[in-house]
Length: 287
Image 1 (cartoon, rainbow, N blue to C red):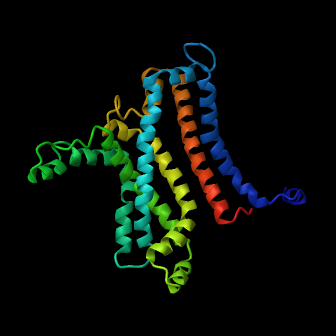
Image 2 (tube, rainbow, N blue to C red):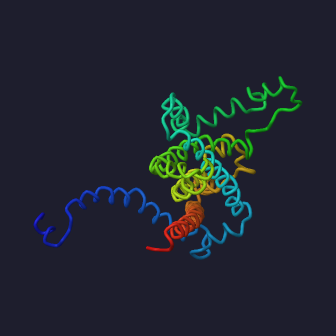
Image 3 (tube, rainbow, N blue to C red):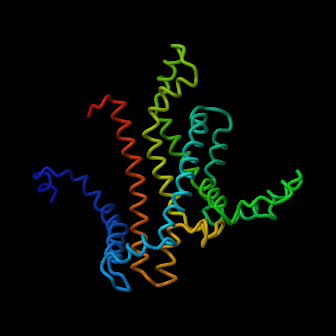
């Protein structure tokens, strides 16, 4: 076996990829392809594209795309931009760095349900936050949960650790001697960051945005627990869930899931296209 592979010019180490490929096929490719073909089998008939036509012709379903984008895009942008200055400062050595890093990534261990429970406890009209506002003379409690803001806060809390860790890893890969050389030539902090660090970091930020966007776009528990699932936070994942498990219309639920994936891929494609153009511009259009 080994000699035959060697004679055919096949690297035997590639065999190590077989378990991973099987895992992807069985747990990702097959469910996606099954859901895709199921979406073309409408329960009520009307042709293979009836479910898609129903989604785009029904404002109650179609508007879930914009509701989800209205949550996911700001959450992803806030997480990415907030992670830059913090990661930039923490790439160096200072006392308490390990403790601060641990505090920043703790929300990863909490999960969306526990985070939502905490937001309800603290931001509810009778929660601690509004009690503090009342001490300072607030006439009415701030409505920060069971609406758009509650879901947005939840997405920021749960998504920031991922953005921070990714940004920190990209920043750590930038050679600090580049900034040191610019400093010896008289460049201040802002110019060093603007013309050296940021251009080198931008491709990594694009990937960070894509991952945090996917995490935010697939929001489900937060939209139910701290949002208004039948109103301003009725995201597309809720529409897919209700179609499949409340109405037992699995083909429609599959079609909504396919549309959800298509929207995510479209946004990711635009970001990666920008990243590719940015890279070509940085390298003078070579390669």
